[in-house]
Amino acid sequence: MRKLVTGLLLLLSVPLAAESTIPKPDARVLDAGGPALRYTIHEPATAATNRPMVVLIHGWSCDSSYWEAQLPSLRTRYRVVTLDLAGHGGSSADRNDWSMRAFGEDVRRVVEAVDAHSPLVLVGHSMGGPVAVEAARQLGSRVRAVIGVDTFSTIGLPRPPAAETAARIAFFERDFAGATRLFVSRTFFRPDADPALRERIAADMAAGDTRVGIAAVQGLNDWDGATAMAELPVPIIAINADLAPTDAERIRRNVPRFELVVMSRSGHFLMMEDPARFNPLLLEQLERFIER
Image (tube, rainbow, N blue to C red; front, side):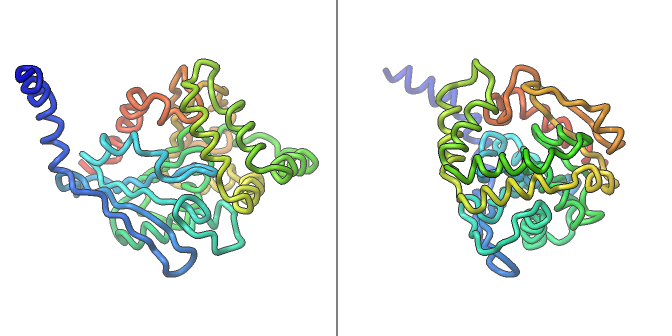
C-alpha cells in the first residue's frame, strides 16, 4: 500500500506543481453603468505581455461555466476573462434590450473594467459569436481577432419569413423550459453524444430566464450579421462542428476575412464534448495573434 501511495504522489506531483504557480481566479461583479455583471479574471502563470487578453463569451441561455474545460490550457499562457452576459448565470437582468448590440455592450463594459489598453481576442460560442462581433465593433482597434465556436453558419442566407420567426418565438413562449429542453437535446448533439452531458446541458439551458431567453432569440433573429461582420477589419475565424455543414464560400462572399476550421465528429458544444481535440485548435488560432 505504501508503494502504491508513493507512486500516486510521484505521478501527481508534476501537474500539481505546475498548477500551483497559476494565481487563483479573481471573481468580481461590475455594477456600474448597466446591469450587474459577474466576471472572473484568470491570470497566467507567467507574464503574458506579448499576448492578447482572451475573452470567453458564452451562448444563449448558458453561462461562463461552459468554458471550464478550456481554462487549464489557456491560463498557462494567456490572461483570460470569462463573464456571464446580462440575464445569464450570476448577472442581473435589469434591462429591456436583449439585442446582440446590448450583449456586446456587456462585454465592452467588463473588458474596460479589467484592462483599458491590452490587445484582445474575443471568443464566442453560438450566440456568443454575434455578441463577440458586436463587442469588437465597440472596442475598436484593440481587437486582434474574433473567434467563433460553432457559429456564423447562417451568414449570407436570406432572412427567414416573418411568420417563421413568429412561430419560433411562439414555440418558446408556450413553454420555455419544455421547448428549450426539447430543442437543445434534439438539435445540438450527435446521436452518439454522451447522454449525461446532453441531459445536463439541456436541463441547465431550460432553467434560464424565460423573459431574457425569448427576447434574446428575437434579438438574434434581428441581427444583421453580414453587415456587422463585414465592417470588422480583423480576421473572423469559426471553429465549427460538422454536425451541420458551414458554407464558408457563401459566408466569404459577404465577409471576405472569414476563415473556417472544422472539428469533425462533434456537436454544437464541441468545447465541452471533446476538449482534448478542441483546445489545441483554439490555441493554434490564438498563437497567430502573439506579438513577435
